[in-house]
Amino acid sequence: MKVIGMLGGMSWESTAEYYRLANELVKQRLGGLHSAQILLYSVDFEEIEQLQHAGQWSDAGRLMIDAARRLEKGGADFLLLCTNTMHKVADEVAEAIGIPLLHIAEATADAIRAAGIACVGLLGTRFTMEQDFYKGRLSEQHGLDVIVPSERDRKTVHDIIYEELCVGKVREESRQEVVRIIDDLVSRGAQGIILGCTELPLLIKSSDVSVKLFDTTAIHVAKAVELALRTDD
Image (cartoon, rainbow, N blue to C red; front, side, top):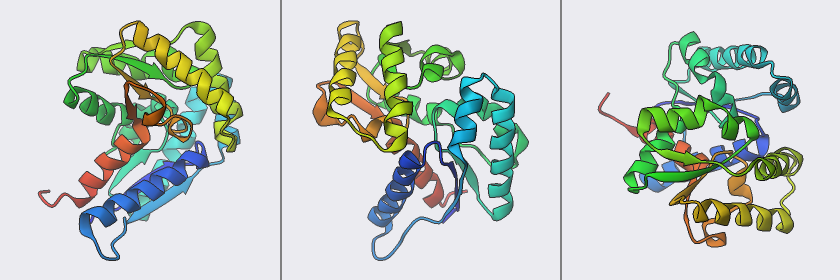
């Protein structure tokens, strides 16, 4: 079994889900008392969040690179950035290390194509919804039509993520707001919805909506476990 390197803490609420899901999947695949071999480096999210909102992505990237190198030196066989937003610096991180980086958008695109869906709605932080590092990758490299909420609704989702979910608050009023936003995306042609923030699955479940959800946390972990258990390389 390969060692999964998890660069998490952004926020720790969703990183805990990464750890739980990876161990559950390995147990399902191998049975008995098997669990995933994981190295976890958890950053101080306060520092990262301030750099994000100040637009200091280069500084945030350097922190990611330092953490990634620590995981590599610790024996990780490949790396997960346990966050969608910080994939803005994923290419820089990948170039700075000697182990593979399993990109969350690539894993998500594979799941969307497998579902036979061409048009998806994207929810996440404003950085993820508004900048091209994520939606551009999906459209340009995978031919997907990606639509995002209105400016007002993007702010609503962004605020729910940072002010509530990242600090462990799950509010019914916020769930209803996000369901409304999802319904609007569906009315505009979305055949599925990407929960493009690793905190969003803490709030929205498949039972809340009538459209297919792509839980990026679960998708990312499933790809990681598949790679960790692969015996053909």
